[in-house]
Image (cartoon, rainbow, N blue to C red; front, side):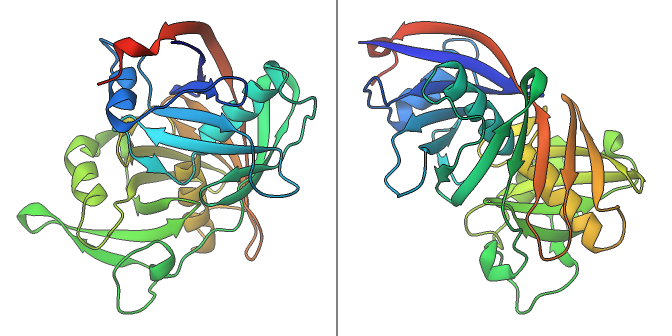
Length: 281
């Protein structure tokens, strides 16, 4: 069967987006892995699926799969691309929509020049909300890695789990070494996204993220939200900041007790059709 899809990205964090309202398909773990392969498939960090909602007063249901085929709760860059996709495909005429995700409702709003502003919801900090194994809540936690190395982390759930480490120079951090150890650490029963944050000044920071089930990506929207919130509540950043990632910048705004607002660009790369039989087991 032929499957229509769109290739998109948000700051280089790239996606294959599929409308499963107007067409039908079965996409199992092996098929997703084959589609994600950058040499033999389409290639992407995440697969985004558009479905009809099963909740009232919601416009769409949004499902997210990492390149390894695992389903995840949320994706900040993805939800911006999702909003642009459903509007461009004329699945809605609204510029502000309510979207059902595995972690709750998000509300993206289309702005000029492909930029999208998203209400990302309330951050969560309690260990059981991450989830993270700890006897009690602390400002920072010591995480033991290989060769006796200990890193200090904050934990934040932005619809998916994040471990945030503040570093003096993010460009010199060995993310390929540390990222996988943090991602699969035994204290994170559902694994975790590992963020490494450098504070430049009170309104600017630089971030690298090793994403759960993907590896290091050019950008991570929920990671930028989690890192900014972590630094804001410790007085390291102001309530509105620019987070610089390898793929570009995101604007993050948050005040204690409120929701997190993320604003950033989206881009459509191309549209295509493929014969799904070649990717199925």
